[in-house]
Structures are given as C-alpha cells and as structure tokens.
Image 1: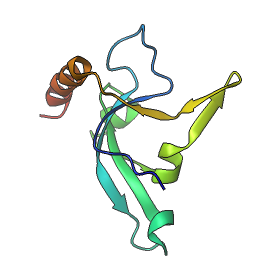
Image 2: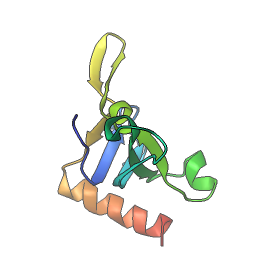
Image 3: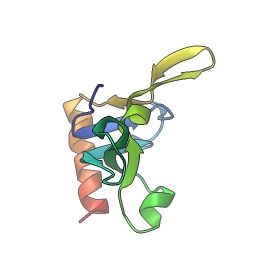
Length: 105
C-alpha cells in the first residue's frame, strides 16, 4: 500500500485558476483505529484544511480518512487522476505554510 508523506496536498477539486489555498490540505501524520484488526484496514491519514472549510470553522480539528481512500484515484468526466496530489512547488508550499500559520497559531 502506498503511504502519503507529510506535506501539502491539493484535492482533485482544486481549481488552479482559483485561490492558492482552495482545497489545499496539510498531512500531519498517520494513525490507526485501535479497535480495528489489521493495520492496513485501520491506517488513517490525519490532515487539516488550509482554507476555511466547515471542519476548520467547527473547531480547527483534523480530518481523518483511511489511507486507501486518500490514495485511491478518482474518475470524473471520463478522466482518472489522484484524489490528492502532493504539492512540490516550493513557492506554493511557502505561501501555504504562511496561511497555515495564520489559521493554526
């Protein structure tokens, strides 16, 4: 199973022509549900939005998603692509880090 690395990611709904932080997320780490047998089935990605989503407004807590769901591809309008794509552009990463630091002091 592929395991996502810590860092910033765009969700497939991100519009490159929209705000830089729209549908941007930061992976904080991995965890697992202690009551589920088998690490593969229970492994979760812990991440938080870098935009004012309903999760952010509800208390600035982290989202959890099973690794398999986080890593699975999405098909939309006949095209298949990753659900989340790691951001590698250092300029974008620096700007998202600034936004993160303001949102999560």
